[in-house]
Figure 1 (cartoon, rainbow, N blue to C red):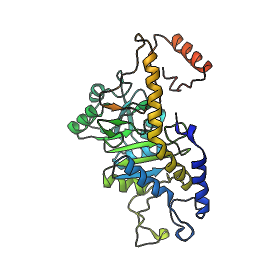
Figure 2: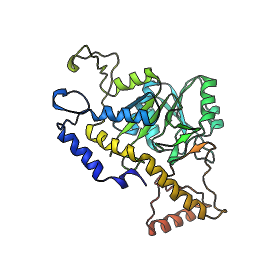
Figure 3: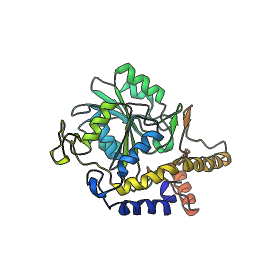
Figure 4: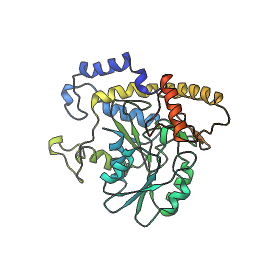
Length: 321
């Protein structure tokens, strides 16, 4: 049950409210013409929900990954280790930050294999970038042990598992920073959009400035004469996206609960001979995808045809069976 399936009257009313309050679609300024700052409100709600110190709304999950990499000090010549089972955005963000992507293998969880990851660490490794793929958390204890051992930063790509937990903590808040996605296929959606979360004030300061052309938003100056200490780019979220996001966030726990009921129903009725994806101990997934293994590509394609004929969707990474 992705968030788009529940979009309805509440989201429409939230967007209408943006226009009723002055029609300002921009997250900054126009103070005398508006009643609310929806992007900033969305960020506060996200930080509260995910029990972290800082949340920054941005234009996409891909942008969130790149911005966080920059904030963690990634530069040209650095290496960033991520994983084989993945979506292209993770590697794109690493390349766009000027670094070299290094690909670790995955284990039966289909997430980063910490042992293989360790074998790839060099003196150029700047960041470990585990990806919580398709609703299931990475075994973060092992990743954080590696990070501490080698003094490396950790960025959690949580774009496909917003709301999942590991050892009682929301993923994205365990490492030095986390990236969320709210595109139209995600667990909650703003159409496009993303979020950078962190408990590190220095990381938050950099991301907040970098995503907004380097603006420091110095209260001593009007925006047109604002101060800056870094260059930036434009990765801002709009007020309409944030208005929808606030409603969708209020639905997140309900969506996960409903997903779990459906997942457990399938899991209960699948024969024991079928090998399912392993879920790490201490994990609370968001249950949006049930993954099982097949013996051959032909068998996989047969399952895809059957599911398609019955009206069930499959993931295109490729079809995640």
